[in-house]
Length: 592
Ligand code: ARG
Image (cartoon, rainbow, N blue to C red):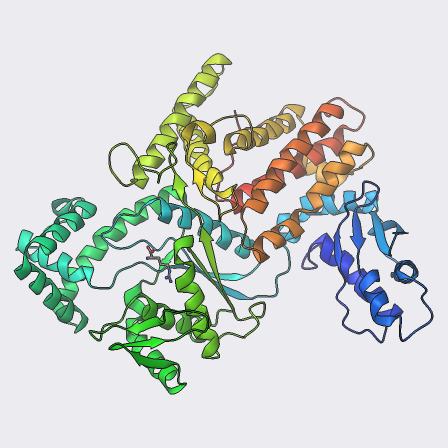
């Protein structure tokens, strides 16, 4: 059997031992959840914190326990025998401190090396999730907000996928709505033979959008035609539908270029997809008594909100909220998702909170928002420029993502070249290697700079900062990883062979600290998943690289008596770092 496979994080394993003890020690207090955490003490690794609250529950009923400490003693005494735990001690009001067996930790690491890091995936209680992310609007600009959504959403999807959740990656593109009337009418006007023109003719869709908007605002007769075009389109007229398809197709090609460069996979189910479901869903909500008439519109009132959620506009048309109600219904009932995650800027917080309230009123979601099925809005802050205002690039008032990625890559390439010239290594590199590394580092830097912050805060976009090779940056981390790989390479040892026939030993204090940090990997991913916080992974990764540096400074690897074990620790660090990069959507580099 594979050690670690399907049994969850170390914390989950220790929790199960305490669960058993709690059941035997306090059979009358059934279903007491074990409260296990990483220890805050230097001399312990984990602790169990149940004693105090248990004592207050039982003191009236039993005279066996004088104080919380005696409760803690009993919990520790009744722990089932296990290879994981070296020793326990009880402190103060009954905290049970646990010291892990170094031998077990060492074996746990070796077994991961042999059987793969997948055996360290956390166990989550959810089977299928929708991650709704990126979701730009057709013909409008895909701005840095959408870049944030793309980067954060992709990472959340990767975290959940690693944890064996079936993830539906959904691109909820804005491909429906009144702006299409104006776009279609403008297409007809500018390109009478629009059916034959390629996308080059229309060129820049953002410019096209702007020009048609200007036409719409300036000419009342155009405006009238545009409004009629919406009716034709929504009525299913083939000519209008084809024109709509053409415009969507051009946008899609542009979006796909960005996704390809970022290595992000998404499945488009745009707003238009849910349109046929809206009437039925609104019918259901009306029958449940949720929908009311208000000032000519149909709305859902939400407790505590002065403004209702509008679900049918005055003119009878559907809107963003009606689409989201239908999409939520579809995801719950047709796609059978238990967790639905929406990644957008924090500005849409109210929209989603009203949407979820409506869904709870309808009985689609449970009242207790901790229970499944569950819906969460993952809001994020703004991207600011060095002037403290909304981030823009030089060439336009918005940020063109392709341009931004080009610049990141060009800068990282220039820096890499200088670095190689300085170290006299430039001849060891092919153009292709240089190109690939520059891309991995450049795009990695953009992603990491975004992900390392708590997503709800604004962050300042700075190429200088994100491409710095010191401090908490992707560049620093990618190079740290490459350096570990080169230690292993230069040792001349066959690492696969060492995994099978060598043994990991954690004797030196810095070896043990490194080993413990490594085995926290699964519970770290678990925490990042549960709280939907990618920065937890960045923090872990940065700490890992610092802990590794301390180990490498204090423990001689190549040529030492402990060489085999220490090379295996190097390899385990590299494997865990690579998995972190993978979860963050960053390509590792192996050579610097
Ligand atoms: N298209 C929207 C925007 O650009 C984001 C859509 C998010 N997803 C959703 N189901 N509402 O702001």
